[in-house]
Length: 335
Ligand code: COA
Image 1 (tube, rainbow, N blue to C red):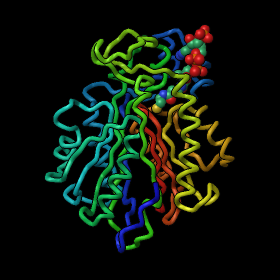
Image 2 (cartoon, rainbow, N blue to C red):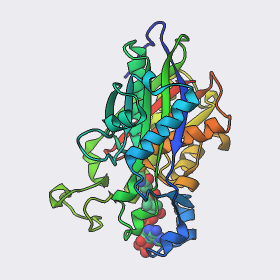
Image 3 (tube, rainbow, N blue to C red):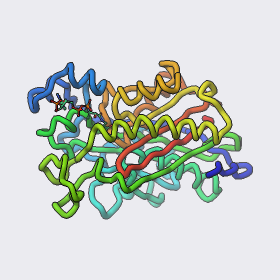
């Protein structure tokens, strides 16, 4: 597959970013009171120290709306300037209506278009690619992409293999048309392999279980995961798609200002970093604070980098994510 040429005259810029996190923080010691685990094991195997957990009426919808309000404020824009809101989540409020439609209403952006994206941990980066294409087409001027999750509601807190990993949160980005056509996405990939669906899934009933029930943690409507297989797949595939994307755009890893990856496990990211010989400061890792927040992790990293003043106009930023489906994706931007 080849990169599409940019439409003449229309560039895309990141106008603002914002986040929302629930107040309640769950530490590794808190988890050790629930399951047979300890801070040392969790820190060594995952890099996670704390994660935020929704309580007191905090929902995917409320987190998404709060992050969008913060991003609009950062962009200096009004809700009515939004043409479309894409909300990536695997913890939507319900299957109908989309959570995105409720968020649009809540922030006062009606009648902007609204759509949920279901691509698990890859959802936000899939969303960036779609938003960029909508704007470059000239049909839409300003599109918000949100990644929002309340993974705590699909986590089995009796399963030590999964409950240590996940956290709740949301992040949003506002993308808007720019006169400089060289700005925006230079190259991207969006891929899937559904034969691997049983590695990471949320069964509703026994009908949803794969033929071999191996690894089912005994509780429906919670996340089931073959951790070791996902780990190997993530390391190999992340490196491969980063290299493919750089090649498509005709740039090298040295040209990148930053790699903003989905936060799955610190060891996965460290291995990719080592294999690709990336300097420490080039890859954003904040999994220690938030855990794996699925679709929210990439915008949480993006926001941390912006707040630190470490992203400049013209920088090359590579977004990369991998998750259930299996789905994997990249988006290489000239900011
Ligand atoms: N605390 C203490 N021990 C634990 C534990 C925990 N929370 N979870 C598992 N263990 C034990 C296992 O029971 C096993 O014990 P045994 O050797 O006596 O059988 C041992 O630790 C090793 O388990 P294993 O599953 O091989 O550990 P791991 O090094 O693969 O780490 C994960 C487990 C889940 C942290 C790791 O596989 C992972 O992060 N995978 C990727 C997950 C991911 O990224 N998912 C989201 C994708 S978007």
